[in-house]
Picture 1 (cartoon, helix red, strand yellow):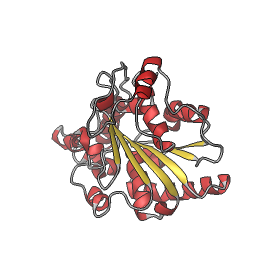
Picture 2 (cartoon, helix red, strand yellow; picture 1 turned 90 degrees about the horizontal axis):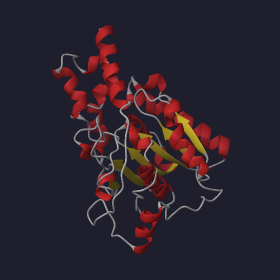
Picture 3 (cartoon, one colour; picture 1 turned 90 degrees about the vertical axis):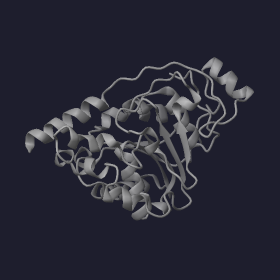
Length: 276
């Protein structure tokens, strides 16, 4: 049992650490896109973010919520970008690196949110959840009172409807996710996801945004990273067809960051395909 768990964790770690490269292209109209404007075309040419002014000093604190095996230092690149733009940023590493029950992680996260609110005096926070962190955050919002404490929710490559990568471990002889509870819960058809997706998927007055990439190694099919019920769902390659962004790359990629920043400032979503 221990060997199988180690093998599964190694497989997931290797996938998480796949590097991302990038190239730029212009957006085209579609469900995940907005029409090209003169301003966005100029921004793509110069590499500037059309919403590049620093945020207001009274902006909500932003909590970056890590994913499975996501040590906090892995999220420092996106945290540094946010701080440079004037946000107050906190990075939350999941208890036990996210191997345990996602609902337990969500309860621990609820306590952390209250600590951040108390420390900053903010009534609400904004959440940026990567991978499993998006599910932890969403469970918190939906079932643990987060609708009154969260203003904006952004998920990066979160398997909102599950991923067959979790299911496939059984096929390769590692049993049901080698006993890793969170992996079992992220399997397509799990009881956890059935409960999370029952009823209103985007409750409250929270502004819901999801970001996904065609090159995601862990969330397959990639459209399982989307939400219904009024969420804004952004596919990186719908705007930037030549941009190559992996699962971990979603927290490192410059174009993806422009989406995060625009969502946090309620700006129109127009990713900068040339952002580094």
